[in-house]
Image (cartoon, rainbow, N blue to C red; front, side, top):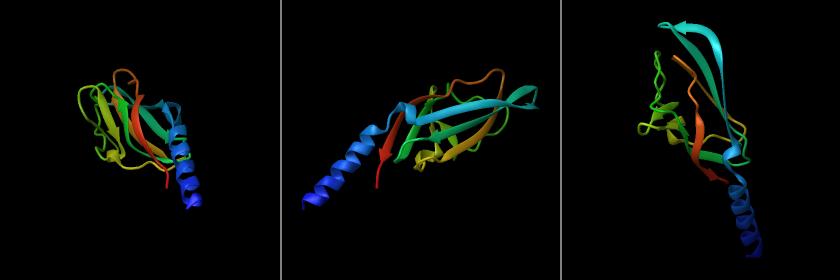
Length: 117
């Protein structure tokens, strides 16, 4: 019984160790123009030791001159977007998408739900 408790406490500690800095968002210009707008490539990487689901980023409505797959990222409201359709992003995994707009969007971390198995 004590081993189960230790394992569960270990999982809780790992989940608590996942923080805002564990979701790393980076982007760069691709060099392409879409309908006269610069295209940007975005990567969202989970650097936590646990999977993270329901990853929410600030996206200011997800404006784009090119189609963005809503299963990868989609608006929740006028300010925030959900990544990977709310599904888990495995440890060290990266979600990629492109968008085209007048200026780069500041995709900053809002929230996530760590899950350690």
